[in-house]
Length: 289
Image 1 (cartoon, rainbow, N blue to C red):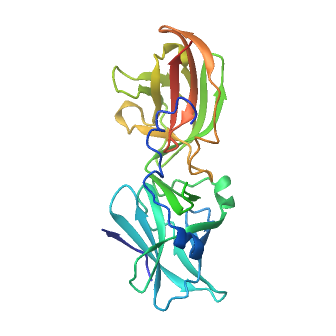
Image 2 (image 1 turned 30 degrees about the horizontal axis):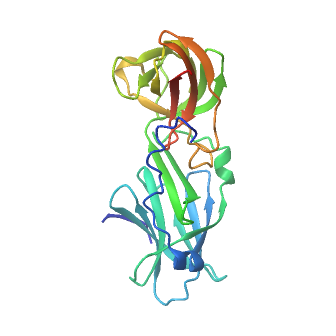
Image 3 (image 1 turned 180 degrees about the vertical axis):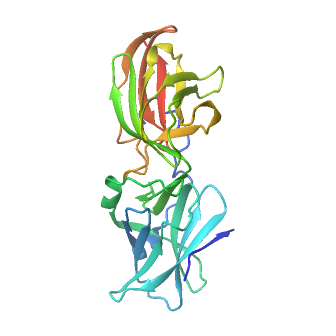
């Protein structure tokens, strides 16, 4: 049966005002009864193994997109060991966002699933081919209330931040682009979050699908600056630079980069990179002292 979509920080993190799981209520009886183990594959698919509900009738695993009214229903089939299994293949589109996981039996009310064991080893060294023109990422995770959710990204094209290099006066970024070729006139844009003033342009070194550039802190006024890639130059797409190809759904608590003091045109500041709640790469600049 084919899955059927249907419509129904650290101290200067500017994305922390709206916690991603703030709207998810706890579900004590579901946590006790419905536990799902997840296995990720290198193509971007997920397999869910759910404890038997003990109720008669066909069972579904239901994913509900928190930011909208979309659902994806996956059939749960017996595995013979007292468990039910559902597969979310990489070819089934899962729009970008946070998807809460439920078990539903015979048309009854969906019950929230709790996370079991997540096997995400295949995501750690994942290097997509980019031949489909997009990158699809699905990472299961436990919410703050102990429920199971899936963070999904669907980027076309995508600019992956592979390594960051901290310097005394700036930030070095090395990455790889997927879904679009890198032109010789590719460049990066450093754009202030409040969209006032033109972006700052950074020249990009190009080597096949890999790119590298440096963000000079001295030219940045206080605020948050988002990093974008223009892989085809001025006439091509603007692509948000992010780090998605690993097993960490929310990088803010784990990938914390120290700031450096810098003298700028706007006075002394502290500057450094951080990942937003969507794992996009930005730079924060605050007045020193």
